[in-house]
Amino acid sequence: MFRLIVEADYALYTRPECKVERATYPVPTPSALEGMLKAIFWKSAIRYVIDKIVVFHPIRYAGVRRNEVKDKVLLSAVKRRMRGAAADPCIYTKESISQRASMLLCDVRYGVEFHFEMTGIRSEGAGETPAKYAEIIRRRLEKGQYFQQPFLGCREFPARRIVPVEAFDLTEVDESLKGERDLGIMLYGLRFQDDERLREEWNTAYCSDRADPVFYHPRMCDGVIDVAAFREVRV
Image (cartoon, rainbow, N blue to C red; front, side):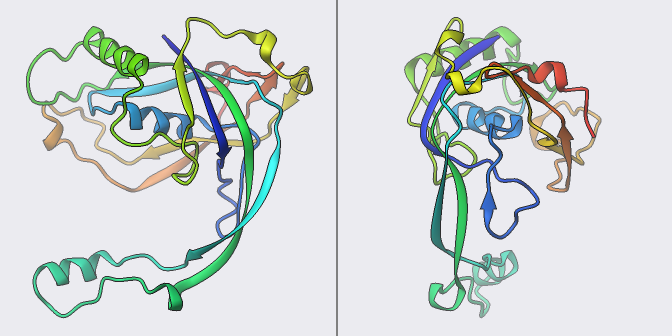
């Protein structure tokens, strides 16, 4: 079991019903926190599981308007260009620019309690044990190491500080978060349509980018969201 404190200036946990102009959930989604942990350490042999989320700072929103592009780089154009064929894989901002508004969370501080599970997929080499990966995760958290910048919801909003702790000091939870709050239906994560049969080698496992959203109905009590308690109550 691991516990850490995460702080950031801004965070954005996009509601799936808000596809054009983004609006955030009031609290982090488990899948967003899993993504943050994967930025610190990722291996196909393990899967992160969020057990508890603690919201320390009051929930405050900020609205921003940004220039974005409405198109995506076409993979087919990139492949044709790599083969030397005539193709233009570029996006031209003057033609594709689109101004969009976003509703963000500002000045956030969270406590995250999590563990990991073995997936059964083995990478090259030996020594695929839980103890090995627990030590790697613990060492990277203590040293502040990561292979890409951890972020909260969107890459534009990086984590300012990530610190491992032994326990959470719940007296630091803001008074505005006291009591019980129904958070409604929230996104839990994505269920990818992978091959359920676990393969022996990571590079032979079938992985698909097709996925179905999974939702859950959590409640926050005195700033604490017991994700494990609501994990099985899904829709």
